[in-house]
Length: 145
Image (cartoon, rainbow, N blue to C red; front, side, top):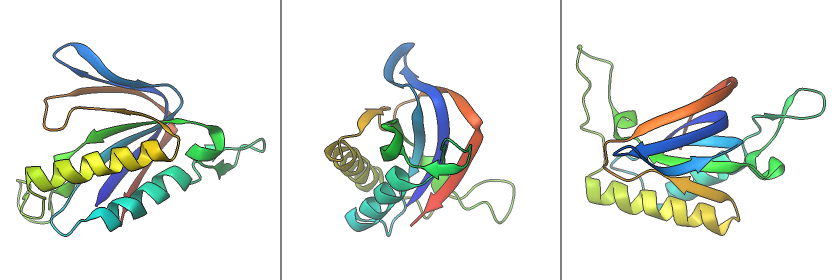
């Protein structure tokens, strides 16, 4: 399971020119699901996302997590994170989960995040989405479990 996280001042996702998910300060998570992934992998990634210390403390050090600052989380499914780009000039998606497996784990991840009392917004699985953000820093990390 792949998670590209970006520390944001704000972020939103639109489908058909309609805002369907929007957050203020927090994390934009682009979530990629691969064939071997399961609920245990989703739980591990969620723990990492919610506790990863990427927000600055009073000494301007990255020492605080999303949970520490009461930040928000925007989760957007991102099929292309499962791409293998090592060979050739075209990505291979052979390691990507099937749409039904990926959607089930995406929905599971979102449900578990909401259970942590995090304000969670989402994109729309499988839709053509436009994502806008103000990356704070910029700060971006690729997390995998």
